[in-house]
Amino acid sequence: MRPDVRVAWGPAPDRLGRRDAAWSLLRGLVGDAAHISTGCARCGGDHGPVRISGAALRASVSYAGGLALVAVADSRSIAAIGIDAEATDDPVRSREGYARALGRTSATVTDWVRVESALKADGRGLRVDPRSVEITGNTKAWTAVIPGSTAFRGWDLSGPSGVAIALAVQARFVTAAGSSAARAGQSRR
Image 1: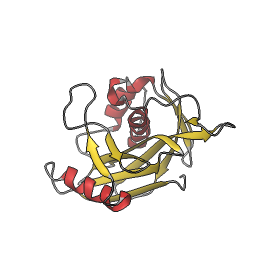
Image 2: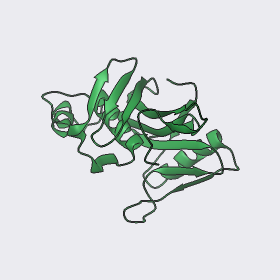
Image 3: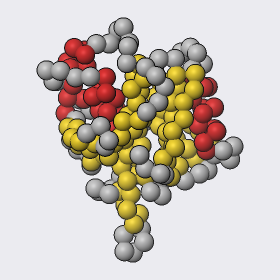
Image 4: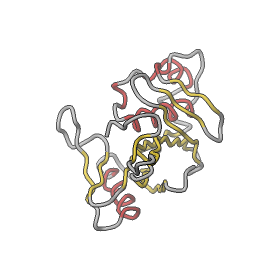
């Protein structure tokens, strides 16, 4: 994983308190001066991608198995970030369900969190058909290609027992003129 990305997790005891748990974790990573907010670009509701203002940071949140997980990255080097996590022993989800959702003959929870972390980083989430995401690579590092977007670099993360975690980022690079751009094209953000 990149050194300019920080990840934290902690208990999120119930559906109503999980956002408070995630924001507490974020606050620990971003400090008191930054403002944390969400807002759906489609409906204006108080959900959707996390935004950090007052600090040069990008953030992403996921929930799994009674946990809140957060990732924060320096926006001067990271154009976009997405984290996703799922319980590995979820009684509601199965390998067959992941395979159907991804349009494959077989799939694992790890396959799913890779795709969803990339879709979160892309910013369109599940408005993009997960079956259209192409993942290549191995357990150390992988790349996700999403139609209509740029490539995302990803990693499977170690974390709490019983939880599969994936992180995807779109890196920035600095041009000769000193301006920052997304590595494989301009960021949507």
